[in-house]
Figure (cartoon, rainbow, N blue to C red):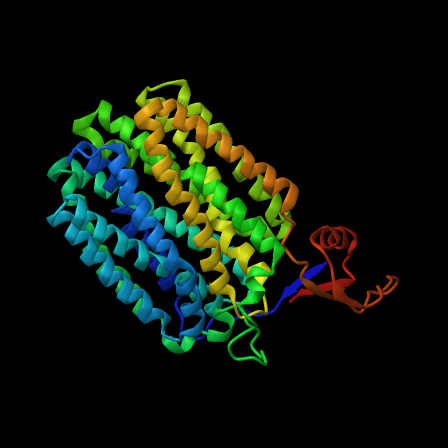
Length: 451
């Protein structure tokens, strides 16, 4: 049997390494904030858990309000590169404010602005990917995007750990402007003309409606709503785990606080990288839902394991499981949304909506976890996350359908050798199991093309 695929339709004039560099460097930009900020404020500035939770909740909720509009704006604009570059400039400025004035009101203002501009990166990079790669290349490229993002997180964790050890935790925030400049250069290296803006928003190339279908398409898509609820529960359970572990490690090893946080990040990200590549390569064959179920099932196990011991080596070892759960979720989310919004022209709006809902879970969990730790301790905070993670798994199992669509195949007879038979030509669309059955049964008289 000969399997023939059509030539690559990667955009002319586009160098794929540019997109790899964007994912790598954007991880560096964002990775110098996030968990490091929480640890810095608690261990170096003397903030209470409740104050940190209040700051992250306020910034998160305001950022949430911008998620869906940001996705809609990315759908509408052709200046996707400029949007990323502008967001990078604001991010660099916010990091400088935190470095210069780490008191409550400046940090609250800067963190809120950063939460808003941070809404741009995920949808914009996903849109660039859709606009630069054909549908059949999408699953593999989404996995590749996630892999380079995780590689960037590993790099910044190592660099930040070294900077924090040599110059103090506060110096870590100066890395943001540096990587912002490098990321902006990578973005601008992609030719504007190489981006198919219709495909970038999930519309068909010959779509009759330039602006795409109605926004109601998003809220009326039941599988998308179910997936958004699952994402919210997943992030409510997952978001506080790394900061809480980082705080426990930092309080026990104050002189190595940044290095300890870096160890947690590196441990998870090193696992996420191969997981993302595997998901990208197998998502079409295995389907999205079975892989998602594995990722969701890991989370409650991880949350409970944190309560078994306060030993630093144990906590860092358990953090490896985050590489499986979060790695799967991060790689599949843009792909699942692309499945559900294909042909609607509302891909980035839907992606922004899902990010909004999952952000609600992450933001509320910061305040909830802080209050639980202050009054009941770290153990109860971990168990609370585990309970919510179980609910997320059940909802996914019972209510979420498979979103992978069978790829169109065309089978036609190859002129047989003397004495051999020739199969009957057929054309149609088959689900993944039927595709595999066909491949097993096919012999050298059958040629298959995938479209």
